[in-house]
Image (cartoon, rainbow, N blue to C red; front, side, top):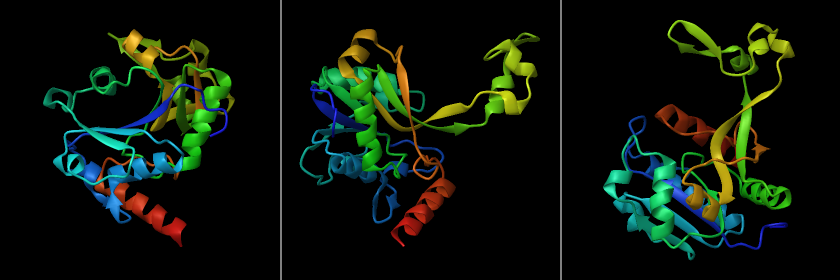
Length: 230
């Protein structure tokens, strides 16, 4: 991993049991292995030698995993539908002794994320001095014409002039796809949130950005993996 910062690099894979869209999602088999293992294997293939899985799933806690992978029991109150990732990490990182270093967050619901993408994210983080690097996908630019409601008042979510512009003249828009986040653990803990002033983006292809929330999403990822193998 060229250009990776001298601070230790570690990955965190958050795998919660509850899932309404696809029950048992994070341990559901995909291409011969449970969903969460795709993130672990991608991190290992990217050269990350310290990987931590925070989970409330017994199957994961009891699994035989590769060297360098440690599982941690997540408290029940941090495994609810309403629990945010920031809340999980603010509790987990100090308990695991992970208060310094470069944190690579790999959500299990992005199983098509490639090792070279993780390496590229780390290289971008090191080269730019960014406060965060995150993977993104192209989004429909017409969202810039949208607004929020304050009573019956329209409040633009972006610039007022965008609301009345032709769609073709609007600037390109991207959206975070959840596949990769890279940032400093110590800074995150000190601030207590993701208040990152300088976020750099790593665009990735649509197939790699697939996010699994339903059975249909899982089937689509399985088809993409099958097509790649062929």
